[in-house]
Length: 237
Image 1 (cartoon, rainbow, N blue to C red):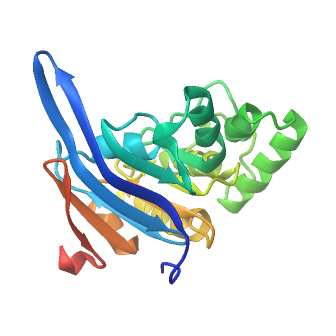
Image 2 (cartoon, rainbow, N blue to C red):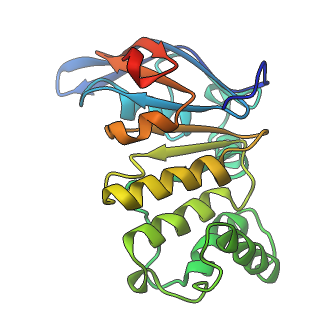
Image 3 (cartoon, one colour):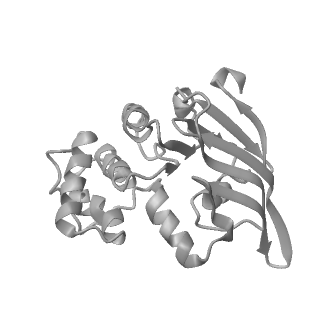
């Protein structure tokens, strides 16, 4: 469960995002505030169009708010230059995507090295760390396999290893189980809690999948661009 009184890894404060759709301005986010501490797993849920994906983009540093702030490990990423923001993304954030986003011509180990190579870690050291991380997610014997030679669950494990290999403070997941069957999705969530969530790291997952709720420390429910409720148990939804 979440670390008691842990330091805050993610702090979103009154974030607003306006989007232009033709001549119309859409208020995608209407003043969202949310904090996530070290050792904590927060699931962000809500219907389509509620603002989940927009909020995920802000949390991951892939977009900037129209107003408000987003703090990652004490750094307000909304005030950074593009170069500084790219560095923060590379160093402090790990992404796990819905469709895995593995490079098809690279082996599992080579895929996992990508964040390290971006951070200019020597290739030999990067491959060694990738092998260690793949072993942690149960794929130590598949380091040389191409994505096409792996099952969906195995590909998601590679994606998790890639997200964690550079030891980020924040892991951000976009629908990590939606492409997986029930049993595989359950195993992936157990893995995320066991491996990706540590005392110095926070985990945020945006999802439609109610199977995930039982693994979360808190669940933030969104609707109409706002966080309308934050609960500690699916029973409180």
